[in-house]
Structure formats: C-alpha cells, structure tokens
Image (tube, rainbow, N blue to C red):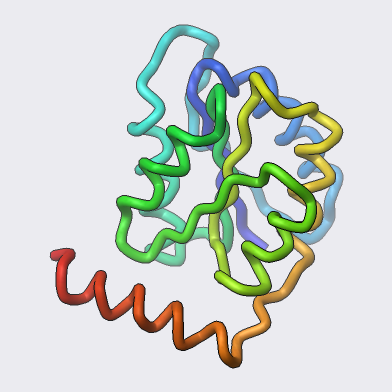
Length: 150
C-alpha cells in the first residue's frame, strides 16, 4: 500500500509522529508530501498536491493535517477524484471508507489527540469499501465531476 502524508505548519509536528508510526508497518510505502518545517505556509498547496497524486493513482491513500483538518479537507475535495473525509470520530472514519470509498483522510493537529489520530489512521487503512448500494452515490459524484471539471 502506497501512502502520501502532507501537512501545513500547524500539522508538521504530528506529521513526523505519523510518518514514524507508519514506518513500523511492513505493508506500506510512505512519502512525505511536505511541508518540511514549522515555518508558515499555505495548506492548499500541500493538500492539493497530495490529493492530485492520490487521484492519479500514484498513491493508494493520503493523510492530510492542518490545524483543524477542515482546510486541507476542503482543498483536497476540489481535486477531481479526491474523496477526503475529516477523521473526527472512530465510526465516522470507518464510514468514510465503507460508504464513501474515501481515498484521503484529514486530521486537525490543534483539536485532536495524537493517540486518536494514530488509531483512526489504522482504522482508515484497514477498513474496506463496501461497494454495492454505495457505488450509485459515488457514480453520481463522478458524473458531476466529468460534466463540470476539465
């Protein structure tokens, strides 16, 4: 499984811990999608870049961080083919995969505990997409993207 992990300055310290956590897994290859310091930066640059790479199938999944998780999620979801959810709760994180086949997950470093984020990353990566009745909804989104995105 190939993963990209990206953050802005607010998520930088958490990103380093997440990269170390994921490096312990033998079933993943990880790339650090930036930022590379705690210096002020613009979250859309990193969220959009990582999301494009996931949408283009260069990576299986992406993990995004900013202060709240909201900004990177909003930016990510502007990318055709990106389906990014905010992992604010264990069950919501699982439903993002089961119902929505989310390919990116976002977290807020200022408002979420590190142990919760690590647990939710593991849930996200091990929960399969259910398909079936859910696929109709994803097809509606894909149809909209095909008609309205270049």
